[in-house]
Length: 115
Image 1 (cartoon, rainbow, N blue to C red):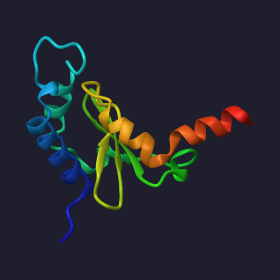
Image 2 (cartoon, one colour; image 1 turned 180 degrees about the vertical axis):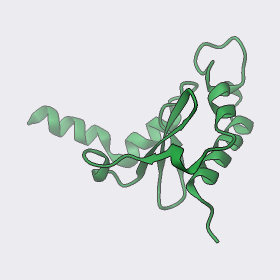
Image 3 (tube, rainbow, N blue to C red; image 1 turned 135 degrees about the vertical axis):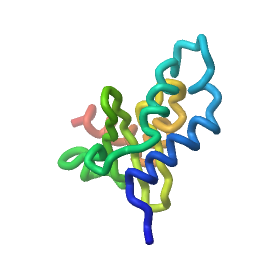
């Protein structure tokens, strides 16, 4: 039996808290709310996971989801190889940088700029 998206994403945030010390480090401006966001996503109701649809989302190789819980949101990309990237993690740009490379966003930008 496969796990539901909300359980997969909740597990992702739990593991992120353990693996990224920047999100729980006090007194550091980047990521100072990330710990609160991670804790808010301990459990995510199914109806609080929304797949982004339409353009430009449908052109991406991964699926982009908005996850929300009461007063906080997060944007996650999920790939067929089970990679999850937290696109609006304020403690680090590393996931977004991977997303940019995987989706070849620089090429999109340069093509749009030329046209």
